[in-house]
Amino acid sequence: MSLYIDSAQIYLELSIGALALSIIFKEKIIGESGPVKVSIILALSWLLYLLTIGASAFYQYLAVKFLDSISPYPGPIQYFEALVRSPGKVYGAMLVFFFTASILLVASSAMQLFARNRGSG
Image (cartoon, rainbow, N blue to C red; front, side, top):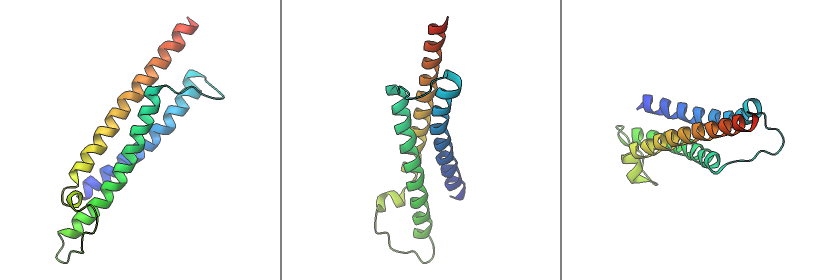
């Protein structure tokens, strides 16, 4: 379980980094400054990265509650009992959010590069 908790933390950190990278990409690679136009694809990737962050944090909570529930002296499960018993569902959702967001971020970046190259060439 600790490996899953650690990997959930990694996805959380990668998602935060990807959010920052998308802004840095627009400034440093594309050369946009000032108010930046945000495509629907980029906005959707941001939303999915935020959902990844939320799912990661929620999974870590559920994992701790799961471990407590199988300990010799378990505490009561007050909230999200079905998810505490099966935290892998939230982990799976986190993975889907992350990889979908990553695909959308790459697609958005590629579209921006193609548009820039078309405009300059």
